[in-house]
Image 1 (cartoon, helix red, strand yellow):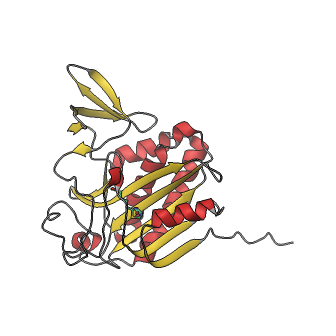
Image 2 (image 1 turned 90 degrees about the vertical axis):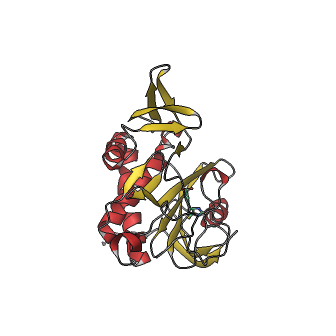
Length: 258
Ligand code: BTN
């Protein structure tokens, strides 16, 4: 008897949505399975971290949300953010040759400029527990608005050619599945070690929501360890590093402004 074929989890492809996050949450509430993926060509109300908008010119970006029904204890959930950032960097290397770097907690950089970001949302409710992990990567932008010039970049600007979005998506999902499997079977250490190897944050002077010091490490749960003479080592579980590359949005100059 032949083994039943393994079904791939669904990838829902849409031309234009308000936010792939919102679509993924709707699918979660309707009972969609773990690892359902929503991809769109354009978002009219894309969400960034900390309530910021994430805007795009149609067809220029990878805009994806992954519904996850976690199989790890709640304490490890924050590591899905680092897991996805690692997966994004590995996927970019594999599919485009670009050696992306990571900035705590979840920015994807090239030459210090923002190439993409990860948004982790969690909810409990009738179909909970669930996470929706959003990934936005700048792929085909050839220029950015004045506001973002010098702060944002794209694969096209870094490598000279725009990659096929589906190739980047396929690599992202493969890497995500592999790193998630390691998180579930081995705990957070492999992800933490790989994040540190890809990261640009450790060893730098940082200011995060008013706390200044040297970033000296990453704790087991993904918290950033920041040290200064007055306070010793402090754990920062969430926040944003102030600095020269805070911009989080990839947008062509002619894209609609929100
Ligand atoms: C950040 O602020 O750095 C995170 C940005 C995450 C943007 C992605 S694009 C796909 C998904 N849908 C959204 O509305 N946001 C995330």
